Figure (cartoon, rainbow, N blue to C red):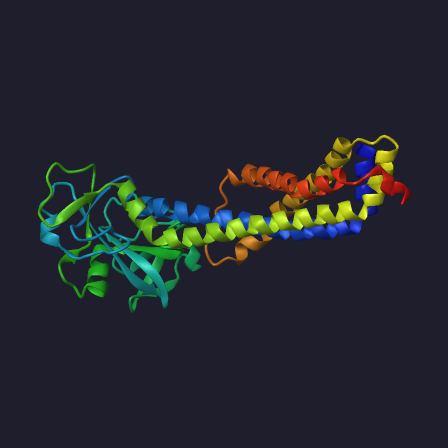
Length: 338
């Protein structure tokens, strides 16, 4: 049987190569779609970690979360809570690029984790995410005011790729809130026993869940595209195997006439489909490295995708091969003499 499979693959090698390339393109897209969903799910957690670490958030009672519907809170209200660090989160621009600005007091700030440089210590200094493409020492106009990049971080984006910019609390108050003594809320170690009226406590996980909310439709859309790509893969492999079975009808009839079993012939056809799919998956694993950088946002392929996609692809190949196997089963040995 192995000899039969090998000879048939050799005979149809050019068609096999074309099919492997076509299927590999589809599977490459499956890897990338998995990477987009992985980024959508990881981004809120990373943004929350970069902005406030493991601390709880105090936000306005009517706010859904610090990144989705930040509302002004009087600074005096936050200062009533022992150990609370005022924070401002708000939309702004950095060199005309939309960003999410995080304003905190400069002293003893552990977040965000830096890849280069230092934390901002004055109103004229900022830390930016690497996705903005800036370097240490660059001048960036934030909300109309020139600032100097003194630190870089990575994986600090929110809401599907909006970069986070970190600077001082007073700078954001002046440029975003017209100098008013208000903030978006505060960071606290653990949930305080009592909270002033007008404020509510959000755990890091609640902030993550809230930030993920606006992306649910996007995730649903990507998952729909993934389902369609799997359907396309199924159709391609099924069509190839069935056409191969049609072209080999007389060959199968001859093999049956000389004692070949339908089961062995059917398995040989399924193995061909699996071989093509495995080769296509390997090519796709290489192709995705060249396509990922072309996306405007990070593509974070989860480790589980590296075994789930190949296993699913093999299962699709087996299911797709059933049509060809049924054709073999219906082939009569008499056709060898017709």
